[in-house]
Length: 293
Image (cartoon, rainbow, N blue to C red; front, side, top):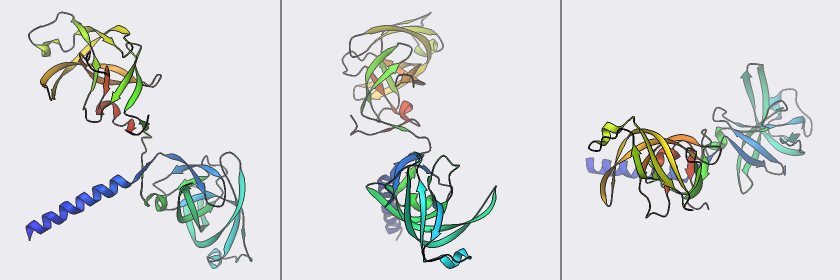
């Protein structure tokens, strides 16, 4: 009995992982469309909103509107929508409900219609409330009723990077054709001819905090001396065994977008890529797409 329960739990966890992996990651703002409008919107993802919302003005209930908005449910409504570029389109949709919203301006009741919205090649039919969003930056707001259909919102707005990238080491003013390695915990930079001020040759730990100068070289053979402070040491285990490397802090990234990160120093003379990027640089900043060139 206990064995069966354990197997069931493991299967559930495995299936959950598979389903989570299938979800598409969205940035805070995505380029989306509304079916039949022919318009492209810069849509804001809003996990705080239950329903999605579309800019709509000049609303007209076809066949005549009842003063009580609830009585117009089931009727068709015509309205004008507009995207961020000022492009307009008049479209029709069926009223499926009304929604009373309370905010700092007071209380308002909006019509809810059923629309196909999303990416041009992947539209989802959801309930959308109609509202005059003229004064708002985004004319299409994507709420939870859309996002729960297989999406995850990445509020950090991470960029996508491929398995190889041209990155700059700011302190060296040197560009490297870098290998992106999600299997590596740390970044690693080619370094030879290491000179440490008042070096303790017997105990690397005693050199932490001292200034060092090392020579690095990129894939084009351009060499530069870099002077920086030793921040620590790192024990690296690999197929060849174990070794202790010095750790320094350097600014690494796309030109103009570098940020400080810890880097271990290694003689990478025999390696194709003189700078290897690990998870401590990627985390919180980039998603890796191995199909990207």
